[in-house]
Image (cartoon, rainbow, N blue to C red; front, side, top):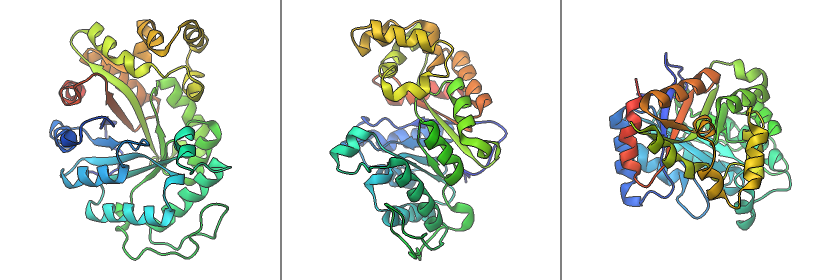
Length: 329
């Protein structure tokens, strides 16, 4: 049985379940990822698509060993007591196979849903602190500004060794510092170039040196014997880079100024990604031949990632899984 707390001799490699994968293919994708030997399967929860807990429950029930991560659940979307109950139930039914990712959520989506707080960081701190206590079977902390669960105790909780890690999917320095203080690690959204991983670990503070911290990275990925074909497929996954929300990802890059200038000179995101220099595409994704993709994964592990998660680029996610398996040891 896989243990998300363990640090194996090699860094872990996972795959992302695309949010637009037809529902009828979700279990086939999860089972194929396990058959091919991936360590982790990550599901996403974006407003208007599929629920993260429902996907995780189905993937866990449909597989035997692969660890399933939820990346991520917005703190403002669920009462922490009931979120803890859901996660504790999954961890009891599938011990040692769950990682819970929590974050602010995308501001525009959360405002649409009426769930964006005046102080997102305060909510995240309170929520994460309470969630971890509840999952361990301890009483909820004193009521805070947003989170109210004082004295709540879950009757049904996983064994101590099966309590799922709670990682924060956050970008900004203050939020990443909070992750070092109240969470079990970080989930870094794509693009997670090695320089961005290194910068994020600095923000994490002393916790970065803890051998139990999870540092998970997402990256758009394409693997092909034809390097140019792989790079062409992955470019669509890089279209959003350059927007204000991605500043934390861009700032540590040696070509940050040039990237911003290129984005400003392009009329739209598609043109920006299509005309980006190949060297930038390689740095901002995991793409190329199997050897090149393996080297990109290794660079992220060397920078401090404990798990590198590949997000399929292109229209056929199931076929992409088989190509990704070529990078596994």
